[in-house]
Length: 221
Ligand code: DX5
Ligand code: ZN
Image 1 (cartoon, protein in one colour):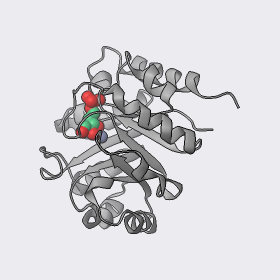
Image 2: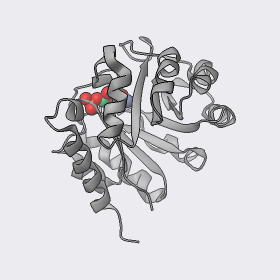
Image 3: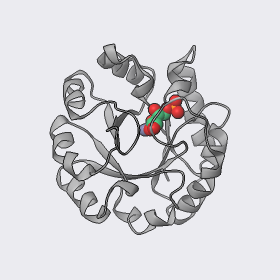
Image 4: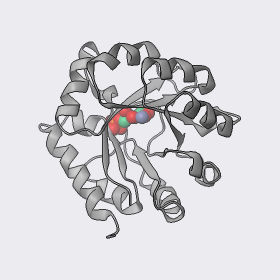
């Protein structure tokens, strides 16, 4: 049975105080810290890379869930491993040889995740899922925080959950208290959220609300 993991996206944090923001989210109940890596090519935005993961690493023991929205993700595996990333999640659309990339990520000592954009069918994931530690079903077009959740992506989550009952299925983009139940019921158990956590009067309450929704939606063992 899968467990709920809540992953605040630091993209919505204060970049001038990133280490403090990581510490704050861990203290408020985050299971993972979601780090959005963008290259201005795969997506029309630029954020952070391995040097920032490296400089954060001594400041937090938290699980660094790195979401690489970059072209040619292969070129960054060694840098992210050396920086101390815990999970390296690449986009299926960005690589020609996903199987080789998954093997390289594991050989470098990281967990491997594969993400798909809203327009990518979930079927592409099936052959790789047994080798993956996590699959990310994007619920917005990658590139920016603060966009609206796309409920149409939930059919992909349900289809994946039906085939892989024990897989960590992550959703990312627009997750908020008003749609978490839809995502949890579809089968998502790893919840990324930026604006709905960071902009809340009580981020801890939102984290707990997400956790309860996922836990309540799990089948009873
Ligand atoms: C978008 C990023 C997300 C983003 C989510 O491309 O992958 O992780 O930070 O932010 P919200 O929760 O505000 O949609
Ligand atoms: Zn992300």
